[in-house]
Length: 95
Image 1 (tube, one colour):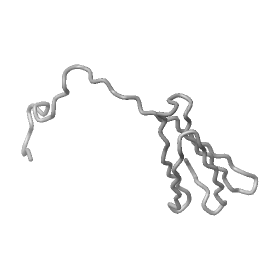
Image 2 (cartoon, helix red, strand yellow):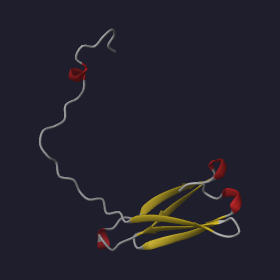
Image 3 (cartoon, helix red, strand yellow):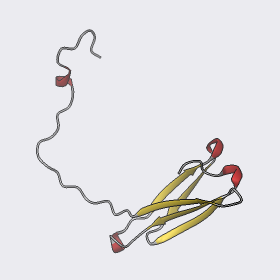
């Protein structure tokens, strides 16, 4: 740990490597939608598409949080969707 005034803090930081490194595209097509119902419940729709990446598409994991940290976890396979309804007592406040 350094003590006192540091005159040249940049020399203690790691340097960025020179050049460009190619990256692989992550094959996600994830979407999440929720719609409130008249009875106060919330309809949740979670999707993992497979139109852009075909057979290389990846599924996805979703976590939804409601009142008092009530939570649910979901896993969606590529090309599939999951529908769920949350009762008014635990409806997600923000997804």
